[in-house]
Amino acid sequence: MSDIVYSKPFRFKNVLANKELETTDIGKSISYNIELVIFTRFGEHRHNPQFGCEIWDLDFELVISERIWEEKFRLSLFRSVTDYEHRLYQVEVDAKMSEVEKKFFGRNISEIKKKVDIVVRGKMNVTGENYLFTTSLFLSPLCS
Image (tube, rainbow, N blue to C red):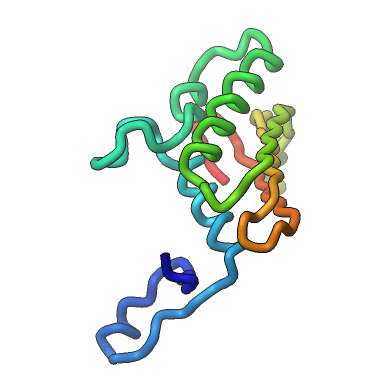
């Protein structure tokens, strides 16, 4: 397997101009892949319908218990990261739901959205270094 890791997004104009594609470090590459797992719905990947995570199915689900929702999502993401990110070991995934109030200045309107804070920890196979990925998503409709 090649040790070269390419940066995202690809700049295909560089290829057409006979220039090299930009490279990145392994940590960023792992983060790109975890983002792809999070933002891919099961069945969306043409060649592997199991690639992705359950957040798309849970996004519009009526949340009766935040703990149950968090655990379902956490387990789904954990399974996908351990199945599709082989550059990590000792993987841990945390998901915490909260409510955030967004105020629209100039208008007397506020909106409450559900927010999920996601943390993925592990160790990188190549170096044994600790790895940390964090992101937050707003639900219904899902956005970052």
